[in-house]
Amino acid sequence: QVQLVESGGELVQAGGSLRLSCAASGRTFSTYNMAWFRQAPGKEREFVAAINWSGGNTYYASSVAGRFTIARDNAKNTVLLQMNSLKPEDTAVYYCAARRGIEFTSRVKENNYYNNWGRGTHVTVSS
Figure 1 (cartoon, rainbow, N blue to C red):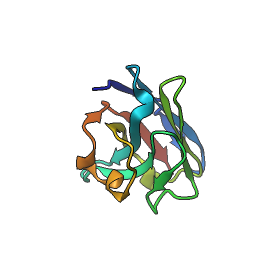
Figure 2: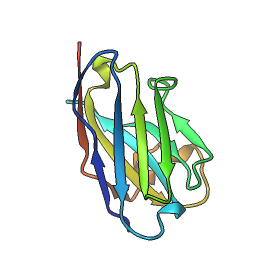
Figure 3: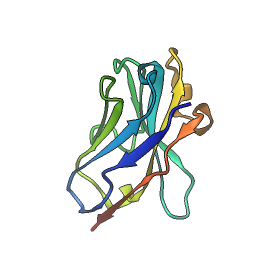
């Protein structure tokens, strides 16, 4: 198990940028595949981006590709989500997720792949 704590969410104007951070506990962080999901009011939680244990492979949702970048620093037990060109439709609670594993397939885009979740950080994009 790994404990996850998100930070960085705030109110920002459309077109602006934010960087979210997810801090993980434990000594085995580098063995976990990591991801960001989001849930807008009245909607289901959806996949945003994922990164494999080494940081060498990533997946992005089509709605954020080219605007968001996921990265990780295994020395600091941290995963980042750099969000640029933000739109009002990016407004949501953003969650960090983790699962220990080496394989990195399209399954990492699914909610039920992950067995560790943070409590979320709120992002509001005003028009």
